Length: 631
Image (tube, rainbow, N blue to C red):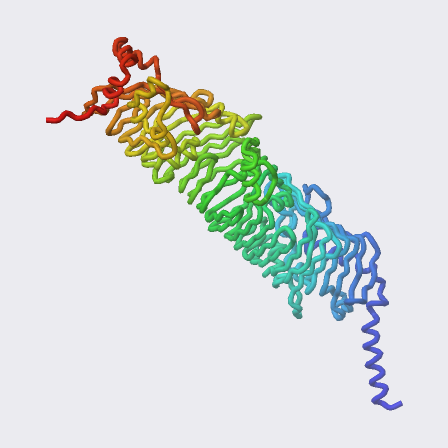
């Protein structure tokens, strides 16, 4: 054998000895050093209760069984981590010299218990722990730095002692990859990729943490995270750590209701809140979630502003300051449970007497200021308004200012008490310069008064359906209209037609679709009692006639019982007298007739007898149709 061959064999033998030496050593000798090194690095007790084996594939290292990491003192669960097996991949050369330099760490069948204490301290921050009286060894953590951390077929549980909220993430399979550097350290960026199941939905997660060591050390680090699933899709970029999150958020959900239920805060049954998209500056701190400079789009509405939700209280508490392009509340009051507001609106029209769905007012508390570009309420539509609303224990108090509706300006208040079995309402409105025909048509179903006017009312009611609410209306108000017309009847013609005295019939020209009473002014004050409006001071003034009136309007039954006493307008010379008359019946097809009792009060008996015995002469006199005298 040549000298060179012997040298080559000696080198090969030395290399072989170096390679097999770790496998010849009894692996249990690593139990104590690993437990001590890991306990010192984490500041927590680390125990390896099961057997230890050498692991060859995929990396040279050790496979540990039944491994646990203790929680800080005072935690609900004594163990923060309990893993069925832990594979520790290590560099070969340091291993032969007795040093452990981890390249890969894989936890399988693990249970990780995360806790946020009543003081806001988290158990996954391995910094100073006052309860335990010691801190993690940052240098030791760096020495156990790794390039790859894997979690396989595991679960993560979380509990927040401040709110008693819990969460459980199942089937967690996640990989965290760091740059493969010569000297391992945790203070490097880590790429996150994997998935988990929460409340029955599978989530795919990927992202990047700039400093994993900072996160473990109880400090914040910048992060980028993306989540995709059948329930939500979200992108976040900002800072996380120390129990806080802040940064830019984009989120889309197929349904607000399904999203809320998935999060464990189901909304009460109802309509709307379907597809939602939002973006803004998001923050989460101590159970308070905020979204500022945000844009939200849902149910065909667009909102811009600031929002926050306090999840620490028994009920979610919402605060908002936002602008909204348009709100239609009718679909949310309709029967049914449809995310589609168009479907809900059809259900509302198909069943207008269904109970109003107001249970949502009991589901949360709120303090909001809203600038509305349009507001559609039952029987009223506003072009714009500023609303300041407070919702507490099912009672909504709303104050509306800068109202614009049908050309007018005004203010209003609305109180809805849904805390009991039957809702209670109080509503006031004061508006001027309004076009009365479309406004009253929507408000009360009356479309016969045209003009520009001012309306004021203060009413209250109770009931579960629109009809019940109308039946129980009580309150008072005033209306005044200028330069308009009363459509459906020419009251001046009715007042001057003596045919009403003789036959009770009103000529077709005096009533009907085309008939109208032009007026300079129309005014009345009124009182509401159980849905019936009573007025004793109606006044209508036109160029031809002045009419005083009184009577009742039954809103639930759509019926009229009005009495009018006309007289010639000031400056008009008429040898006759106005004939008092009534309007009765349904307001769609009212009946007109002479008011005999009022007539007897207006004239003496002789005049009435003269009218009855010589109708032709009286007719000429009362109608003013005598031929003019000729010179």
